[in-house]
Image 1 (tube, helix red, strand yellow):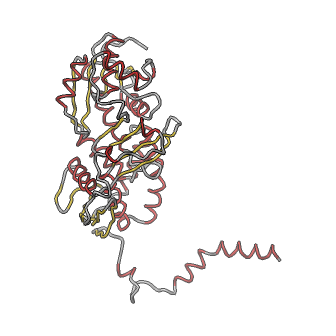
Image 2: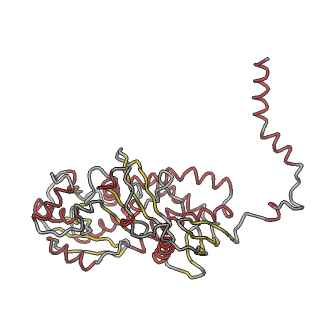
Image 3: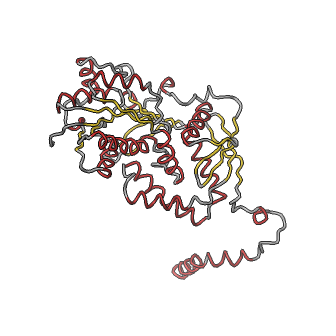
Length: 403
């Protein structure tokens, strides 16, 4: 490890980064700038600042990234219908590149020559942060304490914190960790490491249980332009406010809970529990609007790219040339995705019940079962025979072989 003169730490004020802040000061004997990113986790930032300074930070920088996060990271991913392994809406994965970009900017502004993070050596976040650092400023030294220190368990971290007088929010009675932003909140570790254990109802923060959700459905109308949501019920909202409103609507109706075992990039399986109420509504509405605004063959090509695009985000390649290339393709397909979707929110369900668009490719005069002047049904016979030609040849060969 080359010598460093100043470090910018991605700091949350939680157990890991509080211990890391003190450890960096002792280990490297240099100033440490604690950088906290507001991506919608609802922290008391005055307390975070005071705790960072009390723990030894030379300076605490708090950046409000909520609008940037939703506009430049969440919405582009949702225009592409990004989803990992069929269910995970990438809430943590999308937050890491926006945080890393700001951390690099602060390091350059502060004259720091090193950056540090609190991701463990087993998880995906270490990859996401460090791929971003290397893509944005490879000259910065990267310090990953979890890979070099001997504090290799939550128990040891808590003991270190107690020894150094660092207050932490985690207790032995509630040992799981959580990570929150405007898109979701995730829970992992501790009692959740056994995939047979059902999450306790008291753990959930953003969503009501199905039993506590309203007995009457909530109807909303969500408007899109170029594949991004712009208004609810005719009220135009900026990106961060839009997602916050959808979170409230979804959470009240018990929408957006997910319990899964996923495949980490580093090679192991991991159990995570997620709440993504607004994102769940957004994805369902967006895909529904596409059913009337996207050409069939364009949709096939786009959908074939979604797994690769989602995997790139999950694995930390947001700033890669291939992700940028795919984003251009995804966004080009969104030029006609304009219109309104009417949704019924009820007891954990988000059901599209109506959609309309000036770009709609659905024509009632073509699709009707009544008499029409645009479709000759007899033409279908030739269409079917031509499409069945290879099947017919195969059947004739089989018959000949059998005889």
